[in-house]
Image (cartoon, rainbow, N blue to C red; front, side):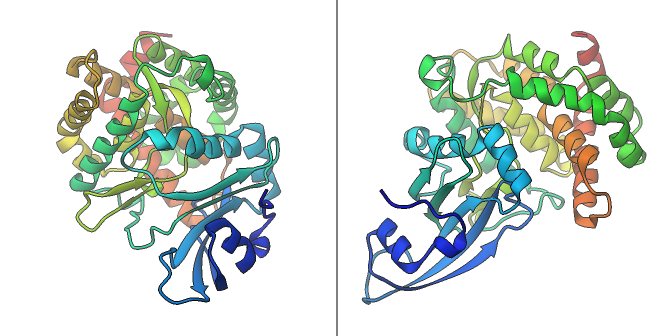
Length: 359
């Protein structure tokens, strides 16, 4: 068994050579994605081989646990490290598009000691979430999302998949309780940036997150959801047609509309979303149909999408904003953008009325 590295210093030429089954002369690791892969430290590793003409990759990406102990412990408690390893080992082979090539995965169960070695995608483009996606990028992203969702559509409530957290389970209960606690802090830091009616909806939302998720989960088919399907967790080809989705630590079992609303609500400029969201939701539905889903109407897709703006986008904005250091200017600007976009999308789709109907 190949030893699991504790840090990047343990990723040596001989270790990586054993992983790739190649004779490596030298490696040059560079940390990338600081502030993005919060649960993991991510490195681009350039490789020099002893023999010329090798067909092995000239560089790879190595993902290791975060060097911050608090993040490591949170990842263990939420099962995020094991979830991502199992996703790549057990589920990814069933997906034909949208995922990176993974060369090696390993974890010591119950610990933060894990490693993922995957293809280097640095030739692709990452979009800053504050800038937001173009329509073309959004169209490609929703088609890939539907292709992934279709693989497990209405097939995840099985004993073999119970290791994937339910989106109405203990993790959501924990977040639900946290939202009530941090709502005053979030209001103090971000209430002034919100549109009319925005803070009132956030206040009504806090403490009802589990109820909202349970409502949608009771009427909509379940699949495997990414649960952080935003533009900074994907990379695009030059023509925006190629999309690769990364960071599968937070997967859950529940309605696919969660991911769709989270993406369009948080990763697009508000006016651009308003202009194109109907077309994008239609494209998502059409791709589901091409993937073999035949019992989910376009009307239900649209209604679930509208309702789902009351889910992850609002929760992520509140949790991030209610617990962050407000002196972090980049982080502050990003949370302001997320909070404005997500609450506007919820208001655009009758969020207060929808919430009143279930509380």
